[in-house]
Structure formats: C-alpha cells, structure tokens
Length: 215
Length: 215
DNA sequence: TAGATTGTTAATCGATTAACAATC
DNA sequence: TAGATTGTTAATCGATTAACAATC
Picture: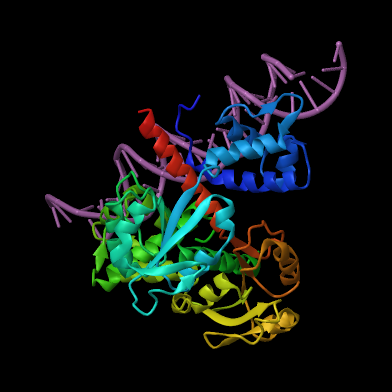
C-alpha cells in the first residue's frame, strides 16, 4: 500500500493533525469525524479524509476515526515512535536555547552533544551536555550514532560544516543558518530561516496597511 | 498596477530572492538574467520571471535585471525599508536568543522591550533591554509604537496573551508557541512551530531509510 | 541590425474541494 | 434497517512550466 510518493504538502500538515489529536486524546475524546476535525482545525473535511487516505484507511464508515488509534498511527508515520540522536553545532544563544528545550525529548529526539569553534565556550554545560571542540565532530557522530545535526552557526561557517557532515553517517540537518546547503540527496535538510519568516510577516503587515488606505 | 492579490506562495519566495540578490550585489555583480538566477537558485527561470512580474516589470528585454535595483525593489515590497518596533514576550532561552540576535536590526526590526511573568526574570538585561512585568504590556505597546509582538512563551499562556494583544495597536504576532492563535484578521500571525519542523524532518529521514530497504 | 532576454499568454501539472457510492 | 461517515472518484481551482511575441 506504500507505493506512490506522498507530497510534501501532506507531510507538512501531519504534525498539526498530530497536535490536535493529542489534545483531543488528553481531553479523553474517543472518536472524531472528519467534520468535527474540520471545524476544529479550520480545514475542509475533504482534505482531512484525503490526507489520511494517503496512508491507508484509518477510519470506519458511519463512525469516524478513533482518536487514540489515529494519533498513534500518525506518530508512527512521522517516525516519532523511534529515537533520533542529535547534536547541536553552534553553542551561541540559539543553540543553547534549543539544547535546553525539553520537549524534543518527548518526541524521541535525544540531545547528545554540542560543538563550537569558540575556545571560550568549550567545556560549558548545556543541560548536562558539555560543549566540545569541532575537531571531535566526526568521531563523536560515529561513536554515538548521531542521526541529526542542528546547525546554529553563522552562515559563513555553515557551508563547510555541512560538507564535513556530508562525509559522516548523519541522516539529516536541521539548518538555522541563513544559507542554502548543498548536500547529497541521502541527507535530508530542513531549513528554519527565521529572518525569512520575519520578512514574510513584514510584507503582510504592510499589505494590510495599504489595503486599508485604499479600500 | 497593485490590483490582484499576490499569492502567499510568491511572498514566501521573495526573502530567498532577496538573499541571493544581496549576495550578488555584495560580490559586485551588476546584472543578472532569469536564467543565471535560475541556475544559482535551482528554480525555473519561468518562475522567477513570473514571480517578479506580479509586481510590475523590473527587467529589460535583452539585458536582464539590474541586481541593485531589483534588490532594492524587493526590499521595498517586503517592507524592510521601514522600521518595525517589536517586543518579545517570554524571557526564556528562546526569547533571549532572539533578543540577542543582531541581524533583525539590519532589516529594520527594532528590539524595544521584553516581558515575562516570572518575577525572577524581571529586571534582567537582554542587549540593553530590561525584562518588564506583564502588567506593563499594554501601556508599553501604546507608548512605544510597537508593531510586532514575538511570542516565546509556553502554549498554556499564549492564547490568553494573544487575546490581550488583540486589544492593542499590535499589527502582527510572530508566534513560537505551539498553538494556533485566534486573533482578528487585522493582526497578522506568522507561526514558527519548531517541533512541527522537526517532525517533518523525522518523517523524511524514515521515508528515505525505507526506500533504501526496498528499492 | 541581430541576439538576448523579458513580459505574458497558453499548456500542464498538482493540489484542493465536491460529490457520492460503499459500508459500518 | 436507517443514519452517519468514510474512502474514493470526478470536478475545480491554482500554481508551475513552456512557449513565444515584444522589445531592448
């Protein structure tokens, strides 16, 4: 049944479904119909059914979906029933903030190591993990079965670090640096470009201001 | 010429164009064709021309686009030629990391204030800005012409804070809390759901692993 | 002028929504 | 059984790509 490629548009919506289903589950709700979810999440019921059906039938005609079952299934699809070890490269403010964020652990993402070029920061402790020098990067990745590298360094260093990562067993890069990385297809890259997001916000602010001037 | 609504798909691509054009400008490149940009950015030349033409003709047949002119025009469209005052609500790790990030200032986003409920944090200094108690929120926004509120508080508090913000002059919320906010249309919301992003990454890691097992 | 490259229209592709038969 | 709601097919909508005439 796992045949055709599932579009990134669908994948992008799964975490949001997962979040709402988790909330329903915590409230003790047992079943939910696509129409209920539709009202709650403000998307069409049609899209919800279409999305779920990409992965096979989770529901039952005349009944709807079992909240807990659906929650677990989506969790499995997202792969958060497994463990993923990650390291953070760049022990600046953002890197430390992400290292200190406990909730990732709840989803199976285990904070294992932290690296920086700055000798000042080496040895510092972030939630029980001490900052290591960049020389130890490759060895550490190999020894600790690291799957994900989080890049929170300035763009100048990011490209060359990504090249180093490309030669390791790393499966994915969560990239907060403001550059596009060029890595082999085998390595997944997920970009979080904060300034891009802020600019989009800025556009929408100004667009609205204009609309109100000339209605 | 500013008539039809421009799709969010296009807006979402503008910051990336802006970034590449800025780099070309810094390298001293004077002109660029849609085909050059196409190769550089790995999108189709057709899309580039189509995108720019949403805002009127920036190019010249037989020549291409003037890098600096195009850069400035896109900057204007994104509204980063203006100043936007922002505050950060939530002085935890993430909030402080964003407050310390200097690059936003370069794009006209001015860090003016910071708020938290925790009495421990009140008075703390983040890059020259001291953390204030939540009671002062509304007054501060009014007095300092704040346009943007950055929400870096746990989801439990986010919804009610958003409601308070909705009664102020705030134009936009940059939401890092893991909830969907319900605010009037007049207020723009841009979500940065980090755990959603991480889950997407997780899905793509596992999908690739599967593909390699059964090719 | 000839060559290059845009602006723009038309064709294609993919994603969303609507509709409804299948079925619990 | 009758009512409800899914799974799925068909229709619509929007976004991307291709093509080419306009024009620098």
